[in-house]
Amino acid sequence: MEHTTAILLEVFIIFAAAQAGGWLARLVRLPDVVGQIVAGCVIGPSVLGWIAPSEPLEVLSEIGVVLLLFAVGLETRIEDVKRVGGSAFAVGVIGVIIPFVVGAFWAHSLGPDWPRSLFVAAAFVATSAGITASVLKQMGVLRATESRVILGAAVIDDILAMLLLGVVVAIQAGGSLRVGTLAVVAAEAIGFVVVVGWLGTWMMRRSSKWLDRANNPMAPLLAVLVLCLGLAWVSTRFGLAAIIGAFLAGMIASETHQRVQLEEQMQPLLVLLTPFFFVLTGAKIELAKLASSEALWMLLVATVLALLTKLAGGWLGAIKLGPRSALIVGIGMVPRGEVGIVVAALGLSAGVFGDQLYAVIIAMSLLTSVIAPPFLSLLLKNRDQGPEAKV
Image (cartoon, rainbow, N blue to C red; front, top):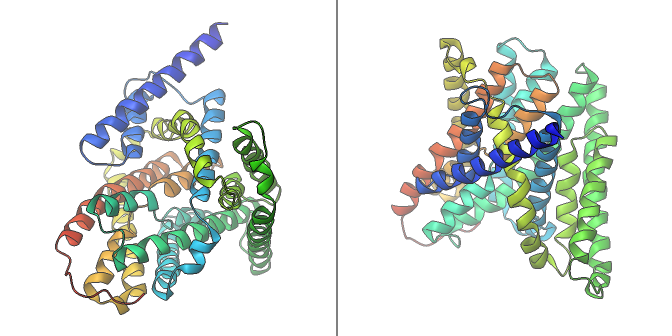
């Protein structure tokens, strides 16, 4: 009974701290996730010591991140990917390759073997579409060419990041980097994503009408949650991360006639459970690990590399739009946000990262999410209002 009481108190503290952190972040026009992670640092062992990561809290955290990636997939339709132009595709692909390669060599220079270095590099890859989209919407430029390229590239970027994460997780589990192993893992990952994604969406388009006939208004949500949890488990049987299955389940569910209804019904679940992931992520940071000159130097280098590699990928991919538009696209692709944090948390739990490197990667993800939006807003305010280039 005392144990249950203690857990309930920690749940209360985490949830209340997450709301307070998110509110304070919005006051200074930062994403909620920034405030929630900072709140985790404050209430965690490094500062106040009000909570400490434990198995029950980790379970809530894991469920929260699975639902988060499901919600991201729910907003990502196959048709959205098909409609993006050549510039968006180029930005998405180049914007994954450059950060991944540079991140891998930087991590390897610190000492880890190549499998661990690839895991670190995965944290450099994915753009936080939510952070960039909020800036574009606030500025009222969602219809601009640069905005369409950024959002289209972010869709491709997220899919590639999920695939890449699955590959590096499986390679790390194998303990060595061999060409044959890499080919098999890549084939399994690609096969799983393609078969489940394509076949699942095809079947959903043709069979989702039965959900309309359900007497229970919550039936569609219950059905897709079963799909989400089931595919999350199946993906782990393929050696992939559970979040990949959840993401694919979201893409499949996006083909239902009840897509908008599902997005609305998912909101209470996300509001309740996803803060546990971000607050616990912050609570796991040992601020003392960032107090040394070595850690601060690592953080500076990691942040600069994260900024420059995404900026370069976006700029090169969108250069046919013109230098200024390419710069806007590059800046828009910089925020790392949730996926970098997910990779860091997975790396810590798998023993890939030490506490110092984990703290550096989390701080890097936060800094890129904080630095990019003001520059993007400034560039969009001064944007030339000439004819839009073709995507």
